[in-house]
Image (cartoon, rainbow, N blue to C red; front, side, top):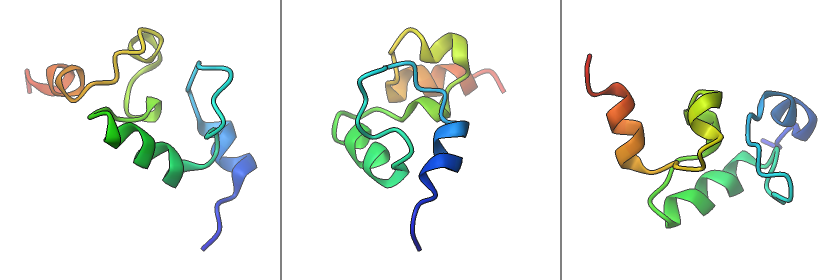
Length: 65
């Protein structure tokens, strides 16, 4: 299966402009997991803009359920 870069890019909410992985979801996920983070698409836009994509931030967003 090949990535459809244009479709992926249209759904990507990452605000880091020089990112070379936009639309390349497999590369993006692998990159962020190395740093114990999740990619931008796992966060709402107001959280994504903080660049805190940590597991802790993600868990905190969902901890009150």
